[in-house]
Length: 300
Image (cartoon, rainbow, N blue to C red; front, side, top):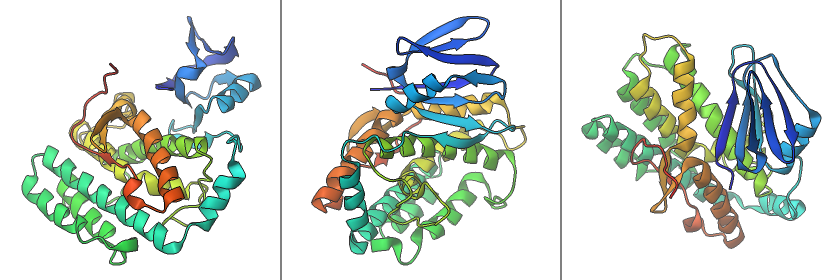
């Protein structure tokens, strides 16, 4: 299973040879392409071959392209490579509204619980208790919008009463960068299991090609939030060091139905469980992440 997240920050020539990703800079490095999960193209002076892109598609490597500010601006994904693409699409289109509402209810509950755990880990257990209480109030489809109510309270506790998501400061830039990495990881897993990312269970924007990815990244957002709260001072400037800390999130551990897995592998398990959930119409089969700590995952 792929586990490496490669980010190219300096001018380079990228190609493929004998199923190896070849990175040519002052030194030349070769990496088995089957080990690569994401490939981020950050420097504008990077050239790559069409054969490499084709090989990335064949091995489900998510290629992330960055803009001039070096923030992710595009994802390159395989085009309909799942063996039962039409069957999965029929299943997706045929999901009932009540079923999708129950899926969304579970996603929102888990997200708010992880937000509570985030406050716990920031030594705000007294504030976390309110979030645990709110998570238990989430109804099917989140009719009373507990998600938004919890988010306002949560962000103010985490980053201070003056914090808003609309302001362009280092905290928000860091959050957006971290969320974009998580989103690309979820989108990659969705495509691997044949899902069409534009068909969400809750998110339903006609201009959003990643509605379903935006649904399933929700429980993972608190991992980004905690990283920013712990490692990014609001007075410092957006830097390469911050980006590296955010990139490490993809290799953190999380608990998936009691089993400790890296976020990269766990996202794959999450989407696999969503296949079983849809086929059986049983939301209890859906496996979502639990935040317990920020730690690098160690493979045994």
